[in-house]
Length: 81
Image (tube, rainbow, N blue to C red; front, side, top):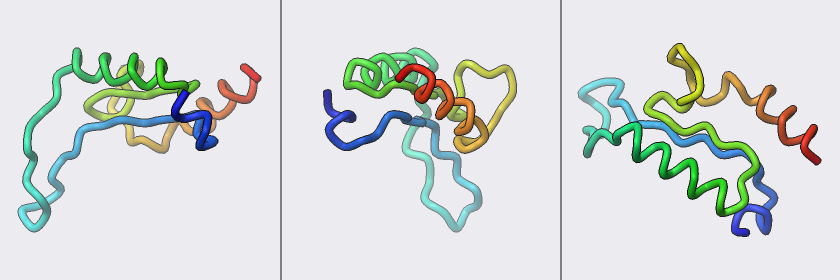
């Protein structure tokens, strides 16, 4: 268990989107299958809750940023203890 040794229970994995030409270019886009693989690997590593997708939230029907569901995720982890 990698994450448990560091005290981290929640992980968000998203796709970098270049906000302007002044920022770093996108190296490549990841597929939904790759995000599912990253989610599964993170859960195997010991993270208790993982949001993984091009917008940081595969499970949600609308686009969201990585911080919107922190309260729900922290409740999930707290309730599971």
